[in-house]
Amino acid sequence: VQIVESGGGLVQPGGSLRLSCEHSGITFSSYAIRWYRQAPGQQRDLIALIDRTGHTNYAESVKGRFTITSDNAENTVYLQMNSLKPEDTAVYYCNAHIYFFNHDYWGQGTQVTVSS
Image (tube, rainbow, N blue to C red; front, side, top):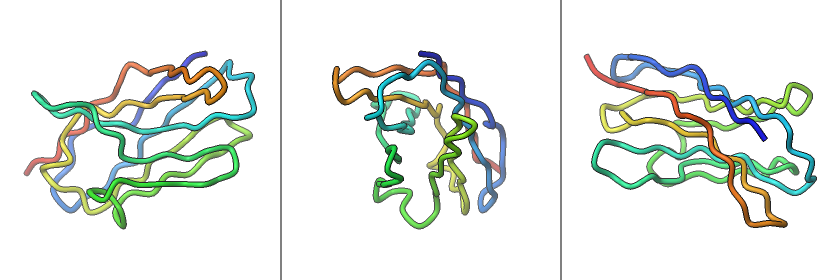
C-alpha cells in the first residue's frame, strides 16, 4: 500500500487549500481514508475520515470548514480546507485504515502553514 499526500503550502488566514491523498495497493473492500494533523509539540489528531460507503466524520475543530471527498475511480481522497486559521498550521498526514487487520498505512505528510 502506498499513500502520497500533496497540496500543502503557505496560505493567509481566511484562505483555502485542497490536499490530495493518492492511495494504491489497497485490496480490501473495507477501509477508511483518514486525515490527521500534527502541530509542533502536539499529538497527531484525527480530523476527518471517509469510508468506502461515503460516510464521513469530522473533528469539531474543522467541522463546517473542511470537507473530505473521495474519487474512487482515481483512488484519491481530497481535503478541501476553507476559512483557514493560524491554528490549522500543522503537518497533515493521510492514513489508510484497514478494518479487517486493524492496520494503518501512512503517507509522508504535507506541511500546511497559515500565516499573514
